[in-house]
Length: 116
Length: 358
Image 1 (spheres, each protein chain N blue to C red):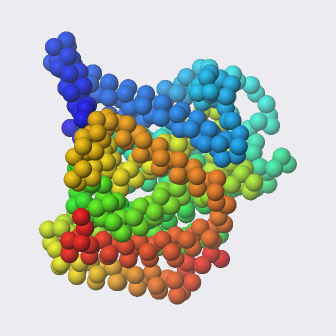
Image 2 (cartoon, one colour):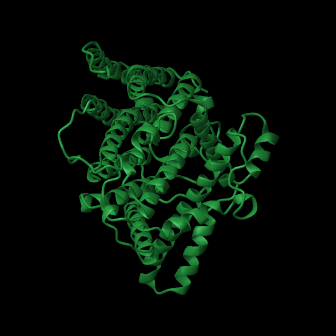
Image 3 (tube, rainbow over the protein chains, first blue to last red):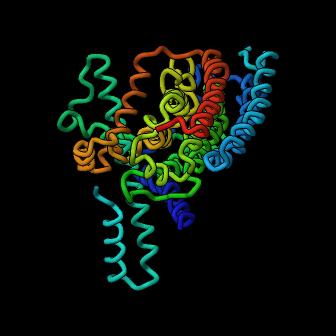
């Protein structure tokens, strides 16, 4: 039942965008102008394309994010059972988290968290 | 307390007596979709007006006051105007990805919106992994933002999208860990079960210190996740024009706008559900007359009231703090919120394991 409802909500979202776009296409005026299709940057003609290699400082953060997000995925099933498992859950997760915190400390020490 | 499943069962029985057997389920699904769309549109319009009125109040202005009494139909008029604006075809964009991006952003926000328990018996998707599902679908939006920036072939869009992506994935971690902290306390990921188990007292009171820390971190991270001020540097208009949606016009832009407001609503309602008891009234053990009086207020008003207060706090942030720089923003997340969050998780486990909560 839930899965069917999930599909219903998904289709609703797609229908919302599609219907509104069709409506907008019907209602909106259209005019042609050579300059209108240009990129909205400075007013002077754009130089070069934006699809090029450039320095992405965020790349390191994306890798660190991957590490911690996978950790969160592992921790969710554990989190549901903490009450039943009791003290052993605490002992086990301390090992898990200490290793992760060491990883964060290593990245910190290496300067991966600095914005350069 | 009024139970909305009475209404849904009544509709179900009515449809069964009216329609042939095979038609009932499709018609019900259609009605669910319609209700969802109407609720989505109304909440978005109300939020836009709410934002403008709150903003005006902070700046000692009146805000919109011409269209309708006290300007209440201003946002409806704005949406109609936006609907009649031309969708400009830009020459050098990647057309397929450019048109796909609004779909992804809207899908993510509608799916997240569909999981929220609004009132007793008023909830569409109720997975047993509800919170996890919500976290998963709301992070699809990042893909939409990155696609929008990349496909626009515009330097402002590209830089805005990269900033937005870095900010959203970083703060996603804090959101995930605070939700994890509350899942440790509640022992369930199903949103309806989480709300039911707060009948005796809201989690923020029952789990005291770790819950309050998690609540504060969740609000900060949620504000950043929805790209709102003071974390709105992906669309810092003085340096990046309009960030990742610079090239979008008309209703295409409207979708990003809608999704931004709805994401704010989703963040506030998840905070209300996990920390402030969702639609549960305020109960104080031992005060029977007080509890009975609180039960008298319908559950939907409790939910809407809590969400409205939380959204007001999020707007308050915007008009109080100056915009952060990108290095300050990443430092706040990785050097302060994340370590505090991990320690807070351990604190919560200690509280739960040794039974130090109420």
